[in-house]
Image (tube, rainbow, N blue to C red; front, side):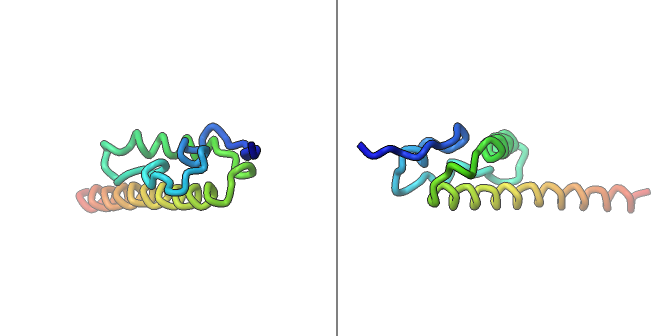
Length: 92
């Protein structure tokens, strides 16, 4: 039996099993609605706990894509907050 590389606890189960077709939702933060905040928080936690030094190439691709989706989601929140601030400042 071939030894598998050690993966961090933050690695989604499908990646640690070496499946060929990973679940695209494993590290997906979802949309920018309030209902998806727990998903984004969980994604951020998992990404923050992952040890990129032990991830295999396919895991690194998934990690990078998930980090990009999370950054885009957070940027949407930032833009919404800035837009709200502009509206509030103009109302003065």
